[in-house]
Image: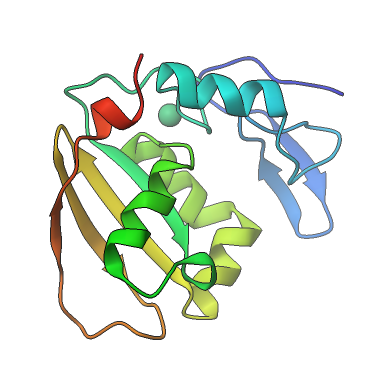
Length: 148
Ligand SMILES: [Zn+2]
């Protein structure tokens, strides 16, 4: 197990797909894995899974959702997103640019991206197979969902 320090720039490792930045939540020797203790920390303390720093309550938080795991109703989408870790906007961009899993979801039309600020959660990108082109807005208190 080789864990990286929090912050930017992210350390990079050689992978079969080239040199990629290592998210804070991953083991740098087993790229693509998630350290369970760090995952729990992200949930408990609103830590960004890429850089490991806190996403403050008044900061925008981004979330990626695998559409294939989403229940049929769109409220289920929000509930599922709440179970995953959040990202700073810049860390979300790094992920979209480099993460093989997220890029694969995007290529297969299975990626939904949510943006949350306080109680306001917005679907900013929905390319799921059932997307109707609408951009629904939900009122969900992300702060309550991720108590500090
Ligand atoms: Zn971050």
